[in-house]
Image: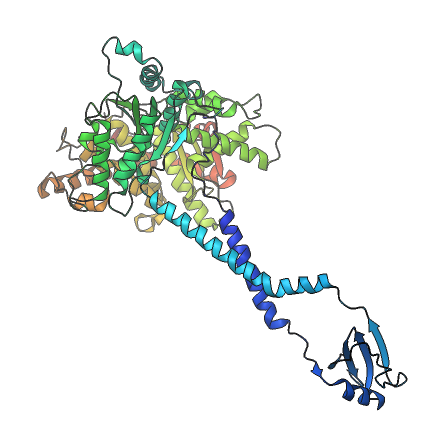
Length: 621
């Protein structure tokens, strides 16, 4: 999916002028304060003119500087003046009895009146001006804080609608059904009389539900762009503060602004932050979040009617929302936004690559086929990573190699070629990854091997990558059992080659994922043997929420679930063991190729695994 960037809103941006002026004044004060320690006024001893004339005639002075009536005197043997005196008005030093041959006399020009006035201003008036400026800045700062305190209960929603580059439905690839549902909302806003004639009521709210990164926020902005109405955007977490009543006050202020700009749209992103189910006992009856939710409920469907304000909200967790929020009259429509299928992924990728220089041999369709299960945000990340990699390699265009590396970097993590492994670790990793590949290749309901590598990626020591040949909406028991066996193929290959007591921690992540899948099959999908067609869904969410809900099955049932999970894991391990022992020659071939090349692509994997077969004891039917 693609969205044209919009200019950020300038509303509410704090001015820094007062703060900068305040720091400047403080800096000046500090400079004056420091200068007071290091710049000391000269200390000259004052003597009567008669003593000065006598000492000069005795040869005790080397120099006398005449500044009008003031005398600055330097003693013999010293570099700087140490004595000052004043001569009588209208009398020269010679008339006062000074012998010019005994001392050097220099007459200096007197300082001007302007200099005296400037010196007086700097020494007397400037500190007063500084203190006055500092007090003025402090008063302005206090006034600004008072304004912030008064606006504490105001809504912080950003207003959009006047941007030149608006997002419209054509900017959003895929999601045809969701756009069709939202198109009716646009028509309600653009042509309200058309629906009023038939007695149709404008929807109060539309809830966008879907996994992260599927374009919920972008679709909301596209609705505003298509309708050409003001668009208030705010996050659910911005309503809730630690002070009681602030959230409800912000809700009232937001809806008041929206009614003044009607018809308009309010978009609340991540509404589950404030719209969670009430009555959980968390925070008591005066929980600030619950009071905020109560105000939202009243504003959406209270006594006041006939306002052309539509609330769009987005969430990943519709299951935790309060039932009162989801009823008709509040959120009248629930629009599901799922992960894109292959045609939608291709359209999304073309949008993200259309403004980038791409080589002619780049196959966007093949990339769309390999990215099953990716969201629009994932696809945008792949396109951006490809551009970064091409720039790093100084390419003029994005090549197929750049896109392939970007896809692998996003899907399975970056290569860590700097990690050093000894020969034994390399061999063990090669056997481990070859075990995954052989089991996955031989079992009939497993996915296709895409790549096998012993180069560390992300947090793994090596990767065996399987990609489904097509998008799937449903999975069978036999498919899941083949996946379990494939996951355990690495551990079983280590066991077969090195012995049961020589297996390593390299399979830790595989075992964790296998246990999660087996428990999902038994507890949530009804795929167990003894508990077939029975579901024992466990509460999701935070620890405190799970602790407050009783488990909906007995200890005996929990024990049976554990036994079912253990049975699935044991069966998968045995099937993987049978497959590997029956195809040891191909295991060695793939291991040797991995040690030599470190990475083996899909076509070469198929050649190396030619001749593998499925033993009857490993088949499920």
